[in-house]
Amino acid sequence: MENALEIYQKARKKLNAFHYAMYLISWDSETEAPVGCLEERSKQIGELVSMMLEISHCKEYVEAVKTLYDKKEELTTDLKLEIVKVWEELEKELKIPEAELIEYEMLLAKANNIWCEAKLNNNYALFAPVLAQIINWQKKYIQYLETDTLKGYDVLLNDYEKGFTKKEYDEFFDLLKKELVPFVKKITSLKPLDDSFVYKKYSIDKQKEFAHYLMDVMCFDKKFGLTKESEHPFTSGYGTTDVRVTCHYYENLLTSSIFSMIHELGHATYERQCDSKYDDTALSGGTTMAMHESQSRFYENIVGRSYPFWSKHYPVLQQLFFENLHDVELDDFYHAINKIEKTLIRTEADELTYPLHIMVRYDIEKAIIESNLDVHALPKLWNKLYQDYLGIEVPNDTKGILQDVHWAGGSFGYFPTYALGSAYAAQLYHQMKKELNIDEAFGADDLSKVNAWLKEKVHKYAGSKSPKEILLMVTHEEFNPKYYLEYLKEKYSKIYQLTNE
Image (cartoon, rainbow, N blue to C red; front, top):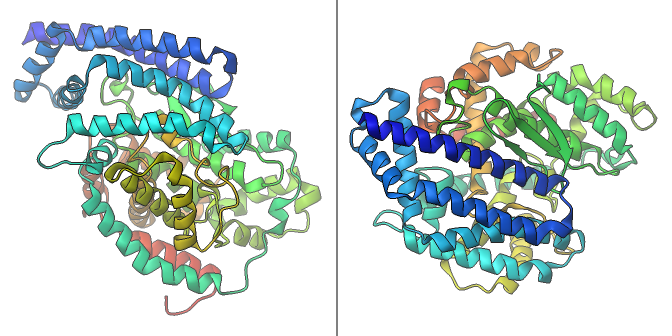
């Protein structure tokens, strides 16, 4: 077994170097690479992937990992967890022809830029052929990996949140629809809260200044990270020492950059606060996408849209944009950032209608994977579901099916984790309230107390514990969506002065 471990560790060092290079290429591609290098970059990525597969698919490496897996009970706890994860991923990968893996990575290397151009020019026809290729690959991937217990769309869902399939998600979303749709309908029938000042003209340079202020508030150490602009905000990184975030700024929508930045910094905080002993291992980073989204949405919504947080930081924002905000009181600002309104854009949606945006995407993904729906029919289905779920008409594809980057990255099965993550966050918050003075922690100069609590309860474990284990350990019960519903109803009943909710 010692020989197997030596072979494994030597190969992982090489693979880690390739992963770091791929991460840097991806970051560059999505932030500042010239569009003219698209074909060349795709070709070079194909070469890198081919070299990685030579390492990870060679007989010696596969046999070494299998030996370690078979003797996993003799390994240390962390190494056992790592080997189990590596073997499970390797088993899946070996079922897919290498040529198809390389071809797919080359396709994805082009897809993001094509999606971006299509979105900016409201040209779905430009993106449709690429999307069709990605979908075809996803369907082949499913065929390669289907088992007796995982079939169809469940294969993709399980990749992002192990143990959650259509059955679990359908039950979760059915509960949300039952409880939230009437609640949203009641609130939207009331006089809308005034948020008109949010749409005035706000200097992008000053928005960037406030974004950097938020980085300090969230204790983001710029020695280990940075921020740039991208069409769709995202977080990327490698281990605990290189974590990067992007943001998108709109001159006539102040809140977009604020909450996008807080959201992405939530992801970044999780990555930075993982125990560094997991760096360069398969357990590096967050445990699952839903738990990762729980952290980003915890900071974005539970902290970032709270009254104590803005009691402390609104004066800074108000002074920065004095011309627009000098006559906007704190209470008015707080109500505006928590306004319930049926809108087109997922990333701008309020907490109550946000799950409905996710349900649209979930239903579309099910239709894509489980039927022969033509890619050109997707905008029509998207528009229909927005009418069905939110009662609004989609004016164009830029504000419709082209608004998200995820499908350009092949991330089918990802969207449901946003809603599930929001529910995880609420359950963690329920426990945090028992252990911290929330007004004090959220309203402090910085979020060090919040960070410390989440580091101790969630972040430090990186990928060594599952969401189920974390929730049981922290909240003393399994996942329970009632805390999510209670959080939403309590908060918005108070804001909208409702009774008996």
